[in-house]
Image (cartoon, rainbow, N blue to C red; front, side, top):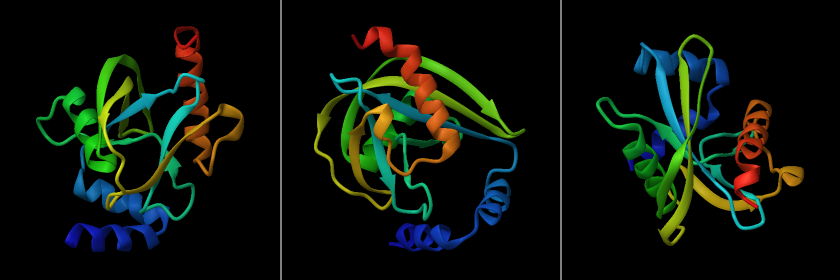
Length: 155
C-alpha cells in the first residue's frame, strides 16, 4: 500500500526533482536492467508505467538491488511488473549515459505466466518500430538500436 502511494506521489513530481531525489536515494550511480522481447513478427514488447505522466511506455525492467546479479534482477523485475516469467537468451548491450547511469539490456523470451497489472505497470503490448506508443525520445533511439542488433536473428 505504501509503495502504491509513493509511486503516485513520484508520478506528479517534475523530472528534475525526480533526478535529484534519485541521487539522494542511490547516491553513487544507478544500474538498471531491461528485458528486450520480440514476437514472431519482430514487434517489441513494451509496458505502460503507472508512475510516468509523460512518455509512460518503455521496456520492462528496473534497478538492481545492492548485491543482486543483473540476470536475477531482470527476471525479478519483469515478474514483479507483469506476472510473466522470462528466459534470458543473452546480454545484448551495456550502455551508459550521464555520469551516473548504466543500463544492461538482455534479449529475453516469455516462458510462462499471465499478465497482471501491478503497482508499476498497467498494460503491455507488442509494437512495430513504425507504430511505437508514447515512448521517451531517448528510448525510441535505444529500441531502434536494439532491434537493429537482433533483426537478423529474428528472421
